[in-house]
Image (cartoon, rainbow, N blue to C red; front, side):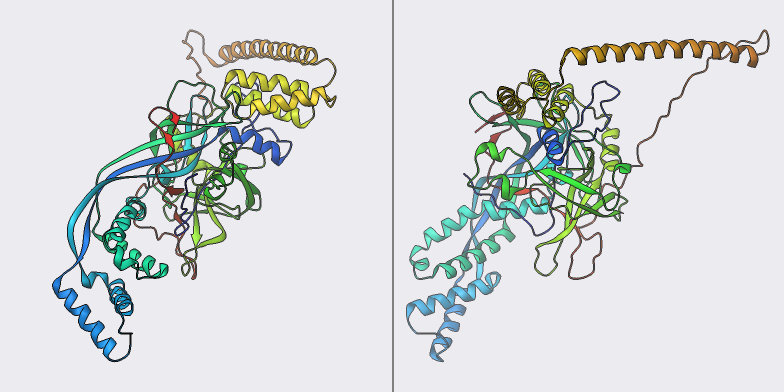
Length: 539
């Protein structure tokens, strides 16, 4: 199990979403009332994915060295301090003092020597959610395009570790005289000096999504799928939204519906679904558990806009690194926000609790509109979500049929197989409460409903024809050609485009001791990922 280092110094991210039942194409975007919070998570989880960015770069960094003048200055200081009793006269005391002086002011004493060049790799992670059956995914812009300054910082932190080991190895006799704390502090000083002088070239970026898929004989396994960025806004306080497309030809991915700003109000509860690093990659969890999104909830405390005009929600719902780009859902199971940022304590640099910010649904929709992407519920999610409701009602026979249909539509469905087993076990145990006559009763009701719809449509056509004749005869003078009346519908336009650039990360002036909310430029950072985005297989 590899160790992941999370960042809380700027702001955090992300969360989850929920899928909704729909039977007809017109009903696909309707939001049914979930039976419970558990049902909301059950419907949302299949469409929530981990979004990653693999970065590769060539690092050039000079080796530190002491010039003759630096050696003379340091020696003079140590001799004077030893002569006046400020330090001991033994070798260990003198060595410790020399290193302390270098550590305190490395720019004064160190100079650049030979340049080392090597290739380093990093991965950053966030959350996303699928919004169309063919695999368009919404996430945060700062997840797909990490801030260059943050990328450099992370390469310095992870990439220079091997340089630190090289320095320690080449000065083993010196380091052996130091305590572990002294060695650590000196190493950090050297790394800081090198980081200022490090250059990055040949940078390459590969983006991927990690999907949980069912595999015979296993609970779930990870599948890395390459993704392509279709469009994105600017990081917070801009429109911190990105749209990526999953590679491959799958047409029935699980999906989650996008709501509107009218679906959420101040005081309402939102539910955040996603992959926070601390729980996703906790060392003691199984791989199946690592593929399980985490749901948190909290009250919407304010509805605001940023200084760039971006509509946002402020909420107490907990988010941590890794949640970036994840969905925030209303109690009706529709996405009303996207995890983007959090306030941090200006003094400690730690996240301020309960001051978390989510990009509003209208902003998500505006980005989708700009790229002609229309969110829609997949048939997989329609069948699966209806089955979840049946399962909650203990209609296990009806649920079993629905889960089997969902699994047939999307064979890799990460949860349908578990529900099928649980439904079969409940039926065998005699706990099924499916109404008598299923599925015959449902078939009769369906046919009856279809007849009602057909009859109503036929009646409407007849009425329209009659009204049309009356209208033309009454409105058009004899002998004049009539103009065709074309319905314009109730069309609507996207929100005006928001500014996409932003200067610095100090929008939102806050009262001390809080600093401005800012994006976590990547959900969290780690050494290279175990997922190969080029061939879609785990490694």
